Picture (cartoon, rainbow, N blue to C red):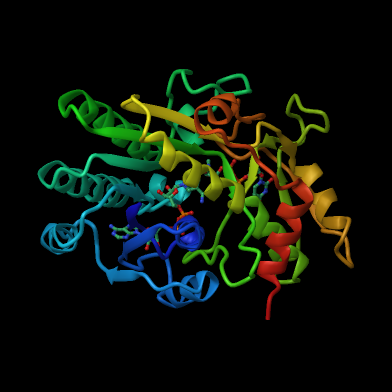
Length: 331
Ligand code: NAD
Ligand code: UD1
């Protein structure tokens, strides 16, 4: 397929393009590099051994985007471009509404005008909020807490309304749980523009000695060891879900929202223990109060992804921790 990828220099977009090129798809990508680096584009080409067209462009720039889309017969759009920090979205909500919603509106408007009818949208498990009992199913009520999660719900709703109003339009919302890890080549991985507060990068910074100690947010949740449980998914499994999803456009469904998670939850202490099994020195941690808004347990029901996309995860927790550490500690 000829794919138009937004946010192609980012963590998930870069891994997707590398694997999509290797599978024989043609890719045209844009990114304004607001949270990523231009060097990633060369690395994608190096990993795949295949060239592709890249434009440094803000998707809010309608004229620029139109020029690129008009020149190409696009089969499907894969829309990764967004700002994604939950804490930053709480302190600066307008920045998130402006970038994530304006960018999507401009893109969708051009898709309508130019009759591009297939889109995969990067949604998030954060659309479910924190009060549901896991495993989380796609038809659970959406209760977004942060402005970031709100932008995902609003964009899903816009896509739903477009599928109702345009006969041929098809949209697939993929709701990611907690992506971690890096590409097998160690050429691609996550390089956040602002210091990450997510668990895996924090553990790696403690392991490397940059940070003294991991604060574990909560020890009295109703879980097997009291610490919170999440559904971590390896980036290569997440990407293979997208590649399987491209076939979904061939069926007669117009819209779907599908969870991409392993269906298996691990606690913070499970993760710490997994890292300790291969590190020279154990991770130093302290048990701290709960983080505001954090649910105790979140993991996916991924049966819809298994059925609709014929997709399964293949990476273990050990792979996720190993690869995250190998990426973080590379030369
Ligand atoms: P990322 O920050 O690494 O990548 C996003 C990319 O989009 C960046 O390269 C950034 O420069 C680009 N971008 C942002 N706004 C843009 C704009 N207006 N025009 C052009 N480019 C723009 O993030 P990621 O982890 O690769 O996430 C990709 C998508 O997946 C995002 O939509 C994110 O919300 C979603 N998501 C990510 C996670 C996660 O944990 N990584 C979880 C759930 C959902
Ligand atoms: C966060 C985002 C979510 C996003 C996901 C993956 C919030 C509220 N949600 O989810 O939208 O999809 O990242 O990028 O930010 N933890 C600690 N100590 C730390 C860091 C984390 O104990 O220093 C714990 C947290 O309490 C949580 C687990 O580790 O239970 C995972 O945290 P994190 O990686 O931040 O992901 P989420 O909060 O699940």
